[in-house]
Length: 323
Ligand code: FO1
Image 1 (cartoon, rainbow, N blue to C red):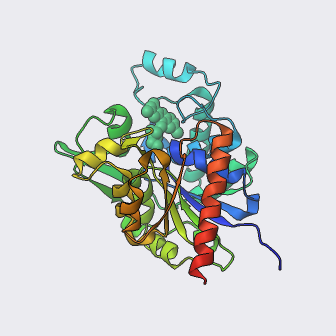
Image 2 (cartoon, protein in one colour):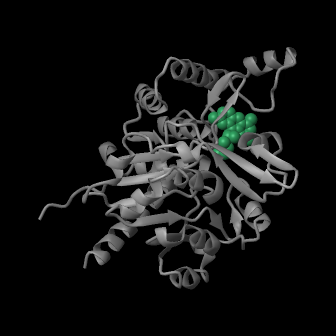
């Protein structure tokens, strides 16, 4: 009998998701990993198209990210921002000098008719990344955060307003006309797929925009591999970002069980942090298998260990569902 290397598709937003994506990239053969990135955070700013989650994934996998912020590039300088400030331009969204090149070149290529998939693929190859990073769609989809004072474009809510407004809901503008990016259907098809991993990203603003692309969630449901999500909530708190605050404002419990319930039928397995022992029965009662482990990824070794454990968990789920 020959044992095949596992093949995996991962869905990711920004910082938290990119950490597990890096662990997966260091565990799997490059041709066996495809990462689908949220583009709902994308926006047009200073005449440029900014794609934060694609860039966070790309910089993280290339080993050139700013490990303190999780976004942007390491060793950054800020002359462009200082010059903008002197001219009275907008500076609430920090674009470093090195990072700026990504946005300028991507915007130029988009304007000349290239697709986001093509540009993302070219950038990652030039930066030495082997696994595929695919945007969820080549059609622009923009997350809009509904608040009592009206709708806010995602980055205005997240960065300019520092997530302070109360969230009453979300809209994904453009999603109805979007199509999954080329390569997604192929990555999710085939009997050799071993795992679909939903990285520990915010379910509402990082993963739901991916599911808002018509047909994409159905492709996941139809995939021949178990779908496993890693909880972004640990001990009732989001490790980074506004997930727990949002859940409370939306009238949900701000715990890992509510995240599992949010994904619902889609899930075969859920990875809970050991500090959430006691929530596992509630997740199992949803008909979802549970892996309890340490999900906090501080070091590279943490990322690799979690990636290995998630893949082994998915493999077990796959074996049991196929008798
Ligand atoms: N996040 C911030 O909190 N402040 C910033 O000034 C900021 C700038 C920025 C520039 C490029 C980029 O790719 C990402 C950037 N982010 C910034 C992160 C971005 O807002 C992400 O969408 C969120 O972190 C959610 O994933």
